[in-house]
Image 1: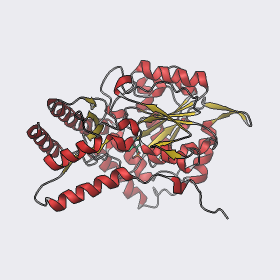
Image 2: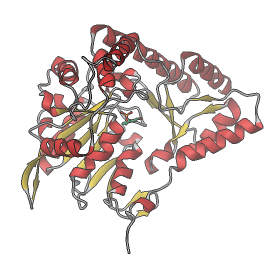
Image 3: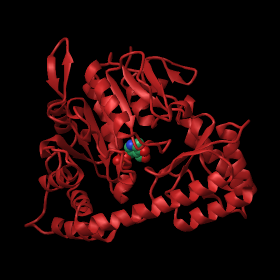
Image 4: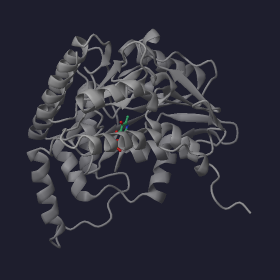
Length: 408
Ligand code: PLP
């Protein structure tokens, strides 16, 4: 008798972070006097900004009085937040979207993990390599990935992002049904130019694929030629879903608020059901399985779009950018090649010749008590790189830089 979803036991264990934790614990035990600084964290460290705190306090008080108390809210999010998103994240950049195309949620991770449910088990998925693991594992759980061999799932199409292609994936030889793109990218910190992203939109239109565009790091974009939304590109509304999050934009990793854009014009053709709009399907899915992001959190998210909120979160991001710029300069001074770190909080470092990702991890840990993330943990094409993050405090970042300089 088969009872358990047989795909779950095939998931690969999260070896990367467990192994990092094991190595760091062993180092600390052997060197109790040394302060370990992590340049590996993928979480923000700065607190919520005052505008967000004020909105939270006000909303908490509302919940305690019978007149303003709110129970279940709309599954798709309150109109006040959906309208603020449309106005500030899209209209301000010349993109016309309707509130009904925005679905507010408790996180991009859950939305990205859940969205694949709208596709058949037979559909083919393409991901970049290296990759944010949620895209792969959620498809493994759904039984869409096939078997695992030599670090890769046999039914997943991998798009290597390496120095030779400037970390811009080439179009696949096998046509996928869904393509996960994450830009600005975790882990490489690289961004896609307008021309490169238009190329992907045109490819998806030509081949009839859906692009699942993860833009969790949009707020870190600095360069003019980098689009902030995939909908800035011609025809993207017919082929792309966009995932955004307040986690890295406004320090909401603990508070939890994100949103997914599913344009009404986005339809897929299917031999059984004909043409079908994903907006209606996602709405149906959310209304069945989700009861909405908490009211107080949505009020806090609304405050991010206020004039004061926008200024305050921008200042926090400037702080992370400064960390990234200083770290990048220090690593370059070590004679190493780096990528990213300008339009993203991540710096992708090419490790010294003759070493692999884990070898360089060990060297930084033992010589400088610094923790990085070995690139190979994000996929086969990440071998030979490590990821550094700019999310530390300015003090820790400066201390890490001093140690890197001593290391040169
Ligand atoms: N997408 C990417 C690429 C991420 O790196 C992360 C978090 O690290 C997420 C999504 C998750 O975002 P959220 O906190 O909204 O679930």
